[in-house]
Amino acid sequence: MGKLLGFLLIFSSLFISLVAAGDWNILNQKRRNGVGSSSSLKNYCESWRINVEVNNIRGFDVVPQECVEYIKKYMTSSQYKADSERAIEEVKLYLSSCCTVKGDGKDAWIFDVDDTLLSTVPYYKKQGFGGEKLNSTSLEAWMKESKAPALEHTLKLFHEIKDVGFKIFLVSSRKETLRSSTVDNLIKVGYHGWKTLILRGLEDEFMEVQRYKSKARQHLVNEGHRIWGIIGDQWSSFEGTPSAERTFKLPNSIYYLA
Ligand SMILES: *[C@@H]1O[C@H](CO)[C@@H](O)[C@H](O)[C@H]1NC(C)=O
Image (cartoon, rainbow, N blue to C red; front, side, top):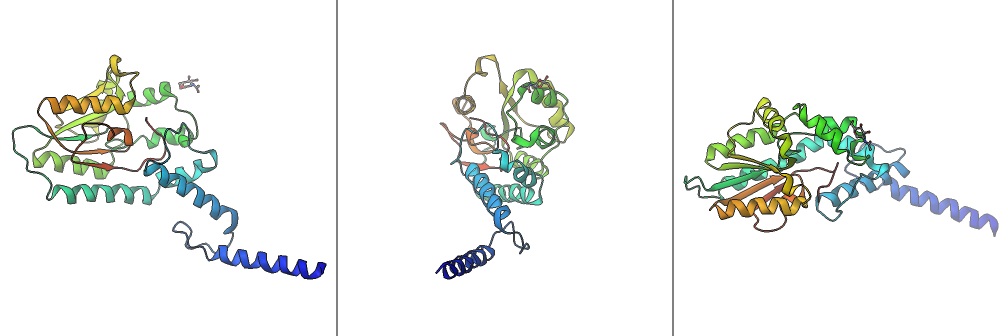
């Protein structure tokens, strides 16, 4: 009886591991060995990441410790670039038929700054990649150095949108005190010709990002602007009213701005 049970146990665990080995995973296509725990951690971290992107997971302070390496790999991978590029392609598709630009200076397009126009990945590379709580002192010190690289696909799109005749508004949760370093940084990497850079003044500093950004949009609408699109990496850049005709989310699973 004991032998039979032992045999059944061995047999069933063999069966389970065969099923597990057959589990197709986009991130694990080539590896046939060592599928066990590393595969389920990858699955866990990828599903964490996707649920951040679709806004099911909200308000996280840090990336789960066990996923920091994974998120680092993703954010420095060709997949992150491909995902961003695909979002930009969708913007171009939308642009090809969306809007009747009247040329009265009221057709507006909004961009976020960080991780939309400029990349903060070089900062997070040195700061635990989202695994450590945000240190705004060191982040702002880094921003003051004005050396964030451009996100290349967004840079090209920025100029295309401008050339169509949209007025470009940059709505950022950066503080007003970072204005000159932000402008320097943007110009240095190739951005120019935006209409207004909107930053957080003292009165907005303790406001939720989402409220601050919808207030900025309300101001634009009150001035008679038609907001055709927003490109950002945070859901708080789109939520609330007034919205835009369309919004485009770029990937970012390092941090969450509420
Ligand atoms: C935040 O960064 C500053 C400047 O790099 C550093 O002096 C400070 O100790 C950091 N704070 C924490 C809580 O890590």
